[in-house]
Image 1: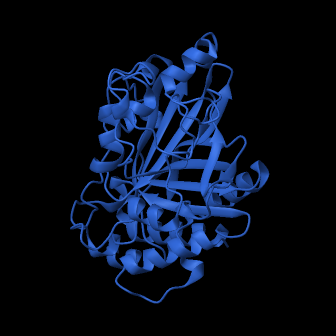
Image 2 (image 1 turned 180 degrees about the horizontal axis):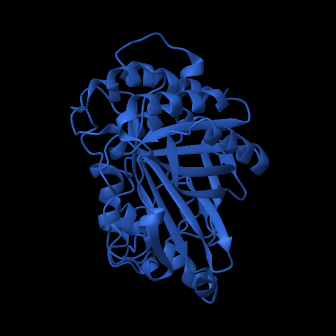
Length: 340
């Protein structure tokens, strides 16, 4: 177990008002500096809404049975898993369609999200199959496999290469304290008591027009993204430092409609979220990104970034077709007792 993971675990415990720290209670969705290289994301719906309590307990037990070692796995609650709004995390609902989205209901939303990450595709697949066999109370709504090419850690950040050939992850925090500050719900947020120590999770299935993208020159691609392929900034600032966009007010060096400039126009105050995305490939004409991020506040995290991205130059190469909003409960089973 890494020191960063232990630090995050301690902060989760602090968020839950001082319960004793246990290293094995670190949240699986934030475990390790870089996520494991393979994932299977499975959205489930309740087969019988009258047996909600038993179904949630079964899902919790099934995930706990596979989590650890070569697997990091967690369950995240959709709004439908909680029934009435009473006791629900206050921002949890169905993910809306943002500008340019074409959400396919067959690939969107769900009462429960299982995310199983592993060291290999085989290990991940077997863990997912074992989990589903233990959950007859649930039916699969949609599923998707993902992978992280060149998955590695640099300067405390987990990095990987996306289908557009660019390295992702430089915008993530580099310490466990910063991860917790962005991703973990605290007691002062007016959330239900059981949700303290948990995280809002956003999943976006984004199809990428890779053939169209590859027709552009590398120079043009880098101006659309706002970084070099290796992560360096267009003004020469190293990848692990913050550029000063104020020194380029007209976007001559870093275009004003570039992805990174729209997403985080003030690099001194990065978006309060933690990204842990995966590539997917379902065929030559259907490949892209399983965008995944965690935050303590949806409105200040993902949604604020998404609104700023409207009109970015990258938009014509991407199409969001699915995903959803979910809530990862805090470690342990105290939340389950509170809800059921």
